[in-house]
Amino acid sequence: MRLSFRNIVSCFLLSALSAAGPLVLAQQRQPAKMKASAIQVMMIQSEKVTLPAEFQVSLYEQLIDQLQQKSIFSRVYRDGDRTAASVPDLITLQCTVEKFKEGSEKTRQVTTVAGATSITLRCRFSDQSGTSLLEREITGNVRFFGGNLKATYDFAKKAASVAEESFSSSK
Image 1 (tube, rainbow, N blue to C red):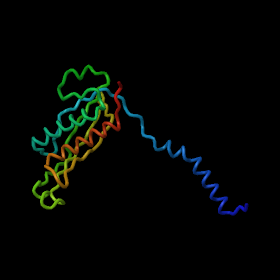
Image 2: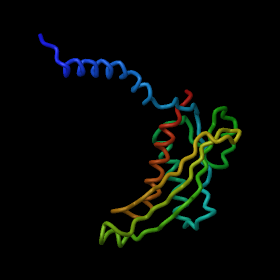
Image 3: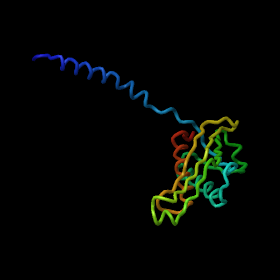
């Protein structure tokens, strides 16, 4: 068997890559999820942007519904629920509207490219002492088909996914 320079280099690269494999995998690991058995969702705040009442209510209800469907937390409390204060590892979710663009359902039906509705909220997850655990800007959209309120559903799904990626139940 004759060894060529190309074969030697190939063997060297292959052994170097196989040795570095576990290091690459270790760097790709996600941070440990924070433990929380319950979440309290505060009313949606809209100080900078004028938000129609139907959007504000829909955002809140869709968010609670999506968090309950994901079953991340053993309990989802509403704003003002006094029983939430007795939960030892409760986290609070406060969302504030940053941007809002109400599109046109008619324009979307006719063109399917114009008339998009978009809503961006800053979501802050905090512990009982008020310390911020996670803060993200999440956008909900409806671009092609569907009513304008579908943007609230899109936002709620994304916010629940962020909670699922970041928190785990302490059951």
